[in-house]
Length: 289
Image 1 (cartoon, rainbow, N blue to C red):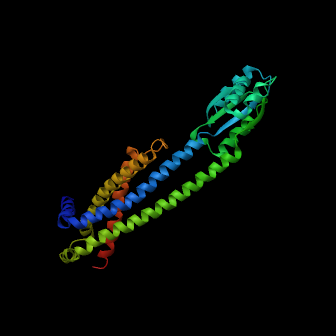
Image 2: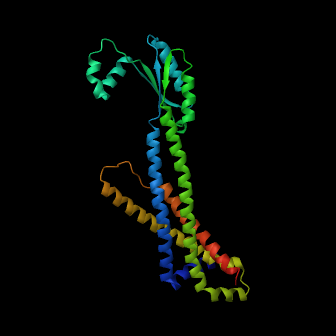
Image 3: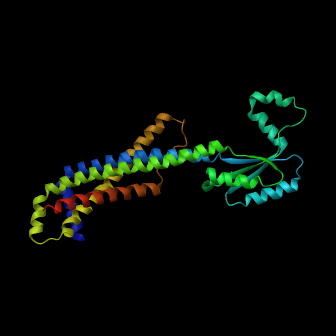
């Protein structure tokens, strides 16, 4: 193992320009993937922010005893899909309408009686903000005798579900395409190194070196280049992100960069790409030596 590591590090000293070119190529390949991942991350956050608005409103019949509403609210809060339940009285509903509906503010002032019913507003837990889960809870709420109507914006929730499913498929397809292109580019850079050392490999085969012994330094070299390329890609992503944020000012304050766990995964992904590209390139060359 020590010999393999020494040979891999010596390769950087023998061909510094080619090594830098390889790292830069890997870095820009991963940079493309990183930019896409940043867009996908923030797009997913935007969808989750929309999903937080998913709620069920159960309108209560007039004259329902407060005790019945309290007991029902406690029962509903125990549903596994429900995050919170809040009661909105008739007076609170009117005050909210007067504050939020400017075009009807004057009309509300002239009312002799309050036409708005009391309601229970149900917030869903993050895993249960899909159309199917919301409908399931809404159907259960409709079973309470004092619930007059249940609304949850079915069309809007279903449309959000379709967008999330489409976004997932597109992210997987584009992410896989970028990864394949990156592997191909990394493989080409490693093959250049392999061809440059073709005579050395042939001599090692003549003296009885196994494929594993020959392949080891190249594979480790690919992993190191993948790691360094990943660091370069992260630096470029950070610079691009900072420039983009600075250009937008405070217009999009919710944009976020990779967290430490994601940074580790990107570096690990770079190493794996380097390993895979090296293994494919060296293996193909060894089959023809």
